[in-house]
Length: 295
Image 1: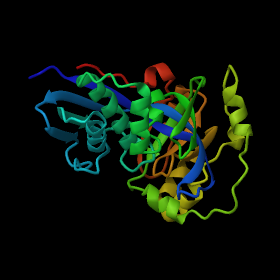
Image 2 (image 1 turned 135 degrees about the horizontal axis):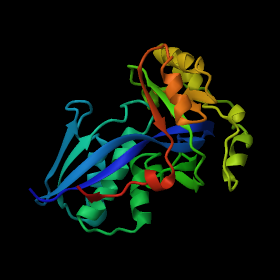
Image 3 (image 1 turned 90 degrees about the vertical axis):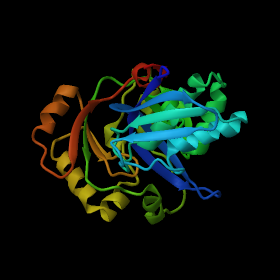
Image 4 (image 1 turned 45 degrees about the horizontal axis):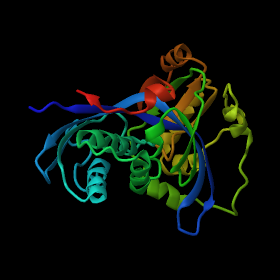
């Protein structure tokens, strides 16, 4: 068998998410703080004959491998970009929750662009890859950077920020999938809101920190009203006494931020509520940025 390449891509949480308003193009204007966390999907690839594309998912059947899969869409986007169809056999190991608001599909798409650019010896400019990423999904460009980033626009405009001090995260994934499109369709917006600059002021300093009392997720209420299991899990996390807690993105994952990994591990032991629970650490940019390596 031909030598493979492998890329590991971490999940993200949204430490803050504001929906500023609805734009004339129908998308929502966002301001968010993306943060990579230590929960990973793994994509492995082998060259194949021209025009051939195979995608195997592990665990089998967890997500589809058809034309709507973001890895498949990333392959086809590259084919269109270069005007030819080099082949690939791909195996995707899923650990990031599906429909959990942690960017699993977007991370996989970014990983596919990075892996195939190297495997097919394309050496495309990073600006081209990030343009393709933005066409695939609003938060796909973030995964080219990793760490802590400010996301604006639809979330596709990304400004890397200095790493936060080490923090521990308790993740709870209720056994329910939440549709991002449905969440936004239920969101009722008034006039464009003014951003609360307090939460951003600290992260642009040389020693960044977040004003947790100002952090929020404008989608939390909609998600908790529409998916009661998420609300129950979030209440369970809040009883643990975190610095901050909310849903990640549009859910269903909820999380609590703790001052250290040890503090998060102690909190995990007394959690009472629904869902799969994990303790992870936040990742700095060096550890979080995906890289295709021989595997």
